[in-house]
Length: 227
Length: 227
DNA sequence: TACGTTTGACAATGACGCATGTCAATATCA
DNA sequence: TGATATTGACATGCGTCATTGTCAAACGTA
Image (cartoon, rainbow over all chains, first blue to last red):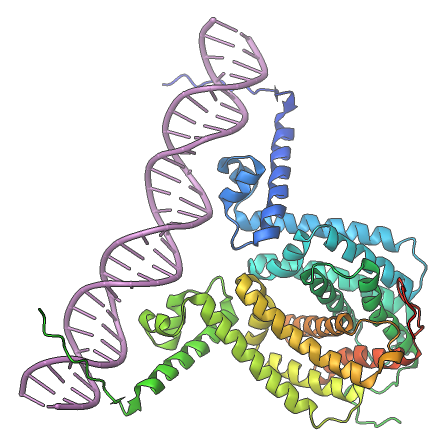
């Protein structure tokens, strides 16, 4: 019946191609997500508030994301890859020394957190409470960072010098130390200078580095009183 | 005009005094809160679900608590004081040695988490996303634990042996290490034996203990080498 | 200029949950 | 035994928000 309209495409709108406009909108939504999620948190963030901040209407939200959770996942991945890049860039040229590398990595991480506190809220707080899906995402991400630490440890201390330790556990412990240190720092309003915070955290890495080679080979379950 | 009824009190109902019945209901709600908050999390927990689990009706919920947030706070405080008691009980009789005390404390903490994983969700995950009010609560609590660690550090390593470290920062780092270690353990399904996890975390304490007395006295940004 | 596309503002729908209210059944006390 | 306190099951009001839909204005193309 109805004359099926030919639906001719418009090549460019305001001088920008369709794909690119869509990509821009998506990007604006991710920025807005960082802002809203990072300040009021995921659970208090409404789609409306995000769209308002992005200067877009709700319709465009659902053009790019299935729902609020999907946007959060995208924001999270965005931050993680950003941090990973910065971290790798800081570690690659560093001398192969525990203390130096620890300081380089921690300076990068802590600096990023201070420069943009919204990161913390998203990376270390809300991510665990969004959904199982996002939770898995975060496990993989922090596991990745722990893997980094673990690799360093394993490289610098070969098997026989590790005193029966499980590198994965130790690495996660160190990552946790960094996370909680920066959270304490943030809560206090970033009073202490960056170098101080880095130093106090790096000491844990250095101490472990100094301790391992000489650690008693006693196993945890030690039945052996190894003197 | 209605004859004002005299509202005589009933001393006991089913053999139990009014106050005690009310206290029991409150206690049942806290138990239910632990269960629901600890499994599905705060934001997915409904008042109805909590009441159903407590075998009480909503009316009694609001008899004991202003709202869901207030119940969460009560549950949180309950867990914290329980943990603190257990921790103190474990540390008091322990020999005054870093490694030994760390192991005693960590064994208590990690054991509690494994025995009741709901603790973790409430203590380390949801608590930061409930409200500013509850957030402050948690800061005080974790600050308390850090204070404990800090006191130990300060006791065992007097001023002149601390290599320009800030005990608060170091303590928070160690607490974070413990937290993330137990979270990694939990996520893996508590595969490793308790002793192994404790050992791998205690090493951080021991390493620091061994490192401090001989640490270079170089300050990070040393302003005053105050001796 | 005329027509279809793209966009922005906003309304409509429906689901959900908190908080309070109603009412009958049961227990206690005079 | 009758009156009132207490309880338990359920209903209601109210607000919020996700998601879809409507419509006119702005824009690009023929």
